[in-house]
Amino acid sequence: MNTLFLSLLISSTFLSLSLSKELCNPQDKQVLLQIKKDFGDPYLLASWKSDTDCCTDWYQVECDSTTNRIISLTVFAGNLSGQIPAAVGDLPYLQNLVFRKLTDITGPVQPAIAKLVHLRSLRLDWLNLTGTVPDFLSQLKNLTFLDLSFNGFSGSIPSSLALLPNLGALHLDRNKLTGSIPESFGTFKGSVPDLYLSHNQLTGEIPASLGNMDFSVIDLSRNKLVGDASMLFGLNKTTNNVYLSRNLFEFNLSNVVFPSTMENLDISHNKIFGSIPPQMTQLPLQSLNVSYNRLCGQIPVGGKLQSFDYSSYFHNSQNGKLMKYRKTTGCMACCNNCVSSTHPYWSRAVLVECDPTTNRVVSLRIFSGNLSGEIPAEVRDLPYLKTLEFHKLTNITGPVPTSISKLIHLISLTLSRLNLTGPVPDSFSNLKNLRVLDLSFNSLSGSIPSSLALLPEIDILGLDRNKLTGPVPESFGNFVGRARGISLSHNQLSGKIPASLDNRNFRLVDFLRNKLEGDASMFFGPNKTTQSVDLSRNLLEFNFSKVVFPTTLTYLDINHNKIFGSIPTQMTELSFLSLNVSYNRLCALIPQGGKLPSLDYTAYFHNRRLCGTPLESCK
Image (cartoon, rainbow, N blue to C red; front, side):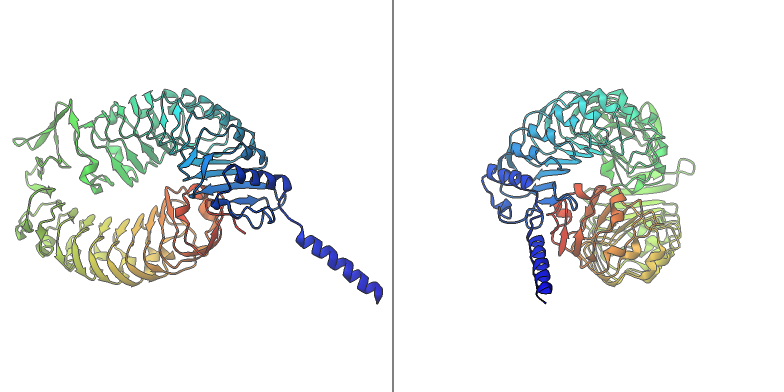
């Protein structure tokens, strides 16, 4: 009996000692306490106490689950001042180092960071760092993500950054960098990183060697770069996003061949000349801006080109002189040619277009002028009309004329940013050739006609920014046409989203700011090609853990709902340009991979128990 008692006592003692043993490595703990001291014991680091375990009780840090060494230090959005302490270099197993949105952090990039040979992600952004981008960063061979954006760095970009063999993203934007883009950036040793150099003072030409690179994203906007940029494109590339706006580029756009993957292109405010290549009608463009250049000629008809706002094209000129409209020929004088205008020149000169063979009016576009009253019923007396647009005319009032439904050749109907009232006409289902219907930014009321699903050619449906009520029609799950984009945001729609919408493969879904409830997972699926989904500010409630996403998804906003569960690991495989899951009921660790850890913390905050970079470490 005494022997049994003694055994139990010994076992209990060992168990007690085991449970009380601190996980935190004592060397790492001393380094962290030194960092806290160097910052002046700030409230932001109040959880860092010498009598608690840094692996279980401290915020902003993460320990390896096996070795218990510190592998992540993430400090953001608080009152912290001074320079980054040299002690950060004494955390030898650190893989993730983040100081961000701390505008009282000053000085240069801490040289001791060069000792962190295991570092994979270095994020020192939205601080007030100065000096040069250090050449020693090229020694961090495991680095996959480097972000020094939104600081005051000056000097040239080190060419040695191209030696980083695993770099997936390089952010040097929003600084005061000068000089040229390094020639070495055309010979990155490993993977080709997403490259962000915008909002600096870079000069000179883009090195021709960059034509060897297949960038997924490249942003060179708001610099002083000159010459040719066409080497960034090419039919065999897989580039998605190119931003070259507000430079001094000068090349012939007519000769450019674009990657079939191009989704976002901004070349505005340059000196680019030539015409828009017809190949652009084949691109899955989500945004386009070619304004403020020297382009001329016909805007090719097809694809997404006619769905963009006029501001995507305006202020183009030849030799500094605005293109003029020749009333006698119905053409624009441009590049010494007379070309048919299939998109109006937005100086209010070209509002009507005639068919070059029959001379019948096929397009009527009126926008941004001093026009008031109701849309005349006489528009029905233009029987060959294919395009009808009234846009940005806030003194246009009254209902949508039902007489428009007699225009059976109509392909595009835009009545947006007016002051129209009343219901969406049910008779629009008669427009069997209609591809684009945009009635956004009005005060239309009542329910959405279910008959719109009968439009066999409809591609884009925009009913957003109105006062529409009732449910999303059940028939919208059975569109006769392909209906690739549907925007119903900023209305007063209610009820559940029809399960029948699972049948649709929308490219774009925007149901933002309604009163919709229940499930919305039917918009996703591995076999779909959906690119953009905005369901924010509704009352949706479903298990996010079980959602399987299309590999094409680049934009997702589900904020301000009641969505629960965890973030699926599959999301690390997606090429997000924008993600927001904040203000929900999500929990568990944010998967550490892909673009997820690099997003701003506001993309995740105000969830129940969501943790991990860029939020605080999980406990």
